[in-house]
Length: 169
Image 1 (cartoon, helix red, strand yellow):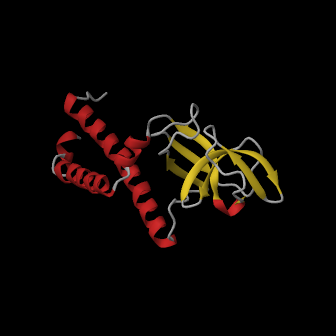
Image 2 (cartoon, one colour):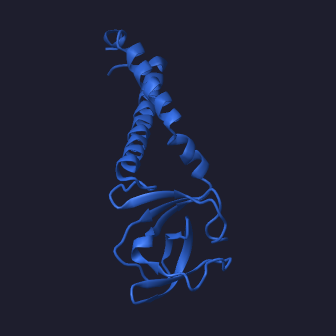
Image 3 (cartoon, helix red, strand yellow):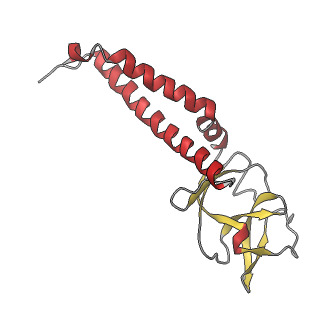
């Protein structure tokens, strides 16, 4: 059996980090490209969207800086928590009633106008997952500057380790 030294363990850890960062970079580039090509605010990845909450209108369950993953659906039911376009912004709310393809949506602060007509086309999706307080980390990880740093890190890793591969075997 071959003995593994500390340098090889460090190399495996850095390689694992490079793979994780590479996956993050691929998703980020995909999201940027999707948004640019489709002129949308949210990148659709197999029917799922990511959204960073910027308001507390659904406290205590959903707070500022929470990251929510939304699932796109063709219709929504009572008690679904959905992200929808409200006037010129996106809001999170709970469906209270569905009547003739129109949704009555409420939030915990009662800031949504009851007469505002919300149709299926205005809804981005319903909440599938919530990551409390993760929005800032997500924003940093998916920024274009971070992607450039990730690519430089991965290229540097492979460039610096190519000459030493024969020595480790």
